[in-house]
Length: 456
Ligand SMILES: Cc1cc2nc3c(=O)[nH]c(=O)nc-3n(C[C@H](O)[C@H](O)[C@H](O)COP(=O)(O)OP(=O)(O)OC[C@H]3O[C@@H](n4cnc5c(N)ncnc54)[C@H](O)[C@@H]3O)c2cc1C
Ligand code: HEM
Image (cartoon, rainbow, N blue to C red; front, side, top):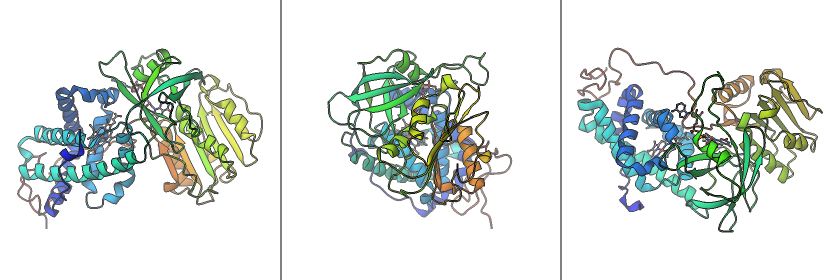
C-alpha cells in the first residue's frame, strides 16, 4: 500500500459542510447501524483486516460505537475541528500503534459511504453522499498527516519481533513480561504512560489478534515491560455467571513462555507524564486494579529522575491476592519524605506500616482524603492521572473537578476502545431531526421521510 493512492486534499465546500452538519442528527439515530454494516461488509470482503481489528470489540459492538461516535462528533464540530484535537490525537495514536497506512483510508472511505447508502436508502441523496465523501477525506487527511508524524518519530515503523526474556507473576491475576528486541538494537524511546501493541494467534480466531498493553516501568534501552491481567471469564458482578474469557490475555498467561517470540509495535499514546511540563507540580496517581500499569511507569520514571515533586498514589484493590506491585510501591514510598500512598482494599487482607503507606478498608473515597496533604487541590498545577475501570475514572474525575481541580489537569486512560459512555443519548423521536438550513432545504429527511423545509 502506498500513499500515492490517496486522493489529494480538496477542502469540502461551505455547502457540503452545511449538509454534513445538518445530517449529523441522522447519524445519531443510525450511526451504530451504519458502522456495524460498514464493518460487516468490509470484513466480509477483506478478511485480512480481521487481524488489525480487535474481533472482541467487533463482536461486542464497542468499535462500531466508537467509530459512530467519532464520526458524529466530527459532523457536529466540522467548522471548529480544534475542539476535537484530543480525540483525534487519541485515535491517531491508536491507529499508529496498529501501523494503519494511508491506503487503508481508501478502503474505509469506500465501505463507510456504501454503508451510509445501504442503511439510509433513497434518503442518502447524491448531494449527501458527496458531502460526506468530501468531509471524510478532510478528516482522513488530518489523520494521515498526524499518523505520518508519529511514524517519523520512530526508529522502526513496523512490527518487530521480541523475545520474552522473563515472565514474573505480580499477583494472582497479573503477570509481567520482559520483552527484548530480537535484532539486538535498543527499544524505542517512550513517555511514561504510553503503550505498545502485541499481536498473537488465539485459538478462537483464524486471524491473529492485536491488543494494547501499557509499558509498566520506566525507559531503559534493553527491554519493554508489560503487565497483563488474565481476563478469566468470570463475571465480576455475579461470579456464578460465566463471561467471555479474554482471548489474548489467556494466551499470554498460559501459552507464551520465556524464550518465545512476540510481535510488537512501538510505544504510542497520548496519556503520559510530561516531565518537562510543570516539573515542580505535585503529581497524584490514582489507580484501580490493573490500571496500576501506566502509573507504575510514571512513578519509576520520577524515581529514575530523582524527582523531588510531591506525590500521592491512591490505589483501589480487591485485596492481597489481586494486588500487583504492592511491595515495590511500599518500598518506593519510604524513600521520599513528600511521597505517600493510600491503598484501599475491599477484603481487608492488606496492612499499612507507616505514614508513607496507609491502608484503608472499603471503597476509594477521595472526599475523605485531605485536600492538600493528599490531593494538593490548592495548587492549580497539580497533575492527576487516573487509570482503572471506566465508571471509576469518570466518577473520580468528576469528584476531583467538583473539589476544585482543573479538568484539563485530570487525565485518564481507557483500557478499551472509544470514549467512556456517560449516559444514554436521548433517542430522537417524532419530527424531523435534520436541522432546517438552506443547504438541506428540499431534501428528504432520512429518518421521517419528510421533505425538509427551510426554517426562518
Ligand atoms: C491503551 C491501553 C492500555 C492497556 N493496558 C493494559 C495493561 O497494562 N494491562 C492489561 O492487562 N490490559 C491492558 N489493556 C487491555 C488489553 O488491551 C486487553 O483489552 C485485555 O488484555 C483483554 O484482552 P483479551 O483479548 O484477553 O480479552 P477480549 O477477548 O478482548 O475480551 C475483553 C473483554 O470483553 C468482553 N467480551 C468480549 N467479547 C465479548 C462478547 N462477545 N460478549 C460479551 N463480552 C465480551 C470479555 O468478557 C472481556 O471482559 C490496555 C488497553 C488499552 C486500550
Ligand atoms: C476518518 C477515518 C477514521 C475514523 C474517524 C476512525 C475512528 C476510530 C476510532 C474513534 C477508534 C477508537 C479509538 C480508541 O478509542 O482507542 C478507532 C480505532 C481503530 N481504527 Fe479507526 N478510524 C478511521 C480510519 C481507520 C482506518 C483507515 C483504519 C484501517 C483499516 C482504521 C482502523 C482502526 C483500528 C484497527 C482501530 C482499533 C480497533 C479496536 O481496538 O477495536 N481506522 N478508529
